[in-house]
Length: 447
Image 1 (cartoon, helix red, strand yellow):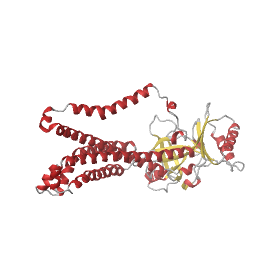
Image 2 (tube, one colour):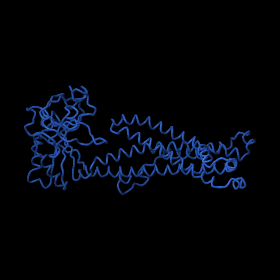
Image 3 (cartoon, one colour):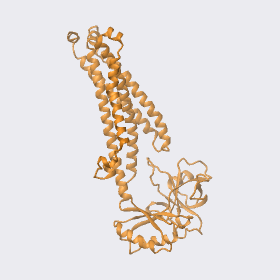
Image 4 (cartoon, helix red, strand yellow):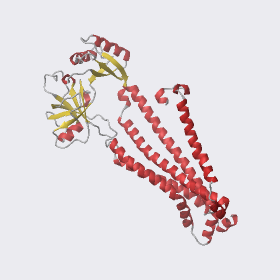
């Protein structure tokens, strides 16, 4: 919350605590009270009289409470298991996103949205404006100015094998000088009257041609369906190959096609990206340049990419810490409950343990017996949680377009299951180990 709203946290009245919100909070409180207090009391008041006559009041209550405790602990540990498995996937997604996005690359980078209300933007005039912005008089204020259109989902036609990843296409005035692997950049000669050209990403070149040595080849690109707007189907000549821009959660990215802005059709708005350490001076130069155009172009918004990346980075880091803390606390509480249940049952079974050891049972047999008594419901809870996680993992794998590897889902579920089994087994083992340290005669005499 601090990362989202800044250092000044709003007070409760800023959140508009109305009657509906208060009623929902009260309802949740009553549900907790019913589950934690009233329901156990009702169960205690409705014991079977035959059980009480057979086992005595204390014995009947003890059996019923023990069974209820086992069931509730099984449910609790099942929920904890699922949350830890799911939390591991969320943490993986966040860490992958942070590792593939360098926040410092966006330092002093701004994005301005330009809009033309009456007709298409005069792209030639904007190219002239770009030259002025990067001229000798402005080089100390503005650097790396680039015009880009919105991304368009496209596909490649007439290819031998269908592409597994989507293609993102956009019209640009140019690319970063160091992003080109082979070929050449766009120029003013790549306009509407010239041959359609394109720069494609290295991954797309590999998937279509099996090599990045593709300069001069022709590809047929167009919208994914006939109802898509913003791009017509066309054959373009590849004049360059650019490095992949990481967008996904893994090291690879979606395929990309860059088209020269001067070959675009009617465009009513564009985004101007530029780098500047003096935003005020840069905005003054940009506004002066826009006023000098024949047709007015309006600035819709100014977006600070570095500030946005920093806030997003902070939110992700805090979220990761919160997930780890909540998961650890939940697991600790569950283990405390399991240890308490196992310790209580061991204490209640001291006489039985003493008799078994007096009759020749080994310490190992006694410990295994006590663990098996408590492991059934715990195992059911963890097993059901693992099965639900496996089903949701299949849905999540498809939902993220295969960007989260299958191994991550398997590791998260399998390792979490094994880790919890080991920790739960230890929580059940310690009380049983303590009681077998006593001599059988001592245990029988105490009871």
